[in-house]
Image (cartoon, rainbow, N blue to C red; front, top):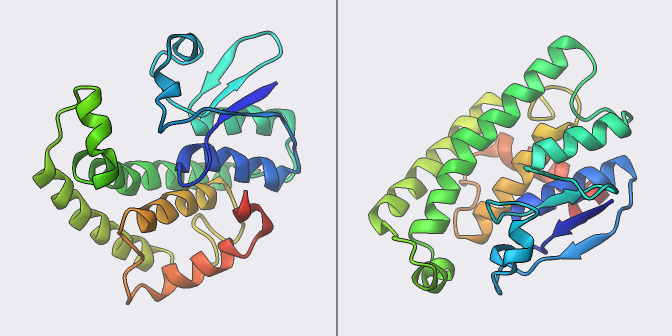
Length: 208
């Protein structure tokens, strides 16, 4: 088994690396350079036809893409510590918050990255990707609004989905760190979110 991976600041591969670190699992990592568009190479597209990373390749040669799906597979192999919950309520809440992080926050950040960030301009030109800078700028404003929303919603609890660190925290940490990298930091008045970020960033796995 091996993981096709990319270094910081790519948020999605980092999710899996943090998950592995929390579980104490070590598997071989194969670097796929996004800057060199290795994820779009014909041989890589046989592993993931969408040309995205990370990809987990199993011993039989089959592959699993999408970060949450990879982590669910690994959780099934290594159930402790449980990062997707143990009780029906925990499982439901963690799943809800993973989806909220992805749909409410990451989608906005992704729109900024693709449409208006300077780092993706040449990449878009090379691969014929039409950018909509105004949409990217509006998405940045929406992302700030979502950060304020998340700050209010986690008031009174230590972690995103409750009292226990989970996959929801991994998802949120990687998205929020990536947002900071592209110029959308946690807003000044978001004290709950800042305290959470300091808490989860202090975990050894956050360095993965």
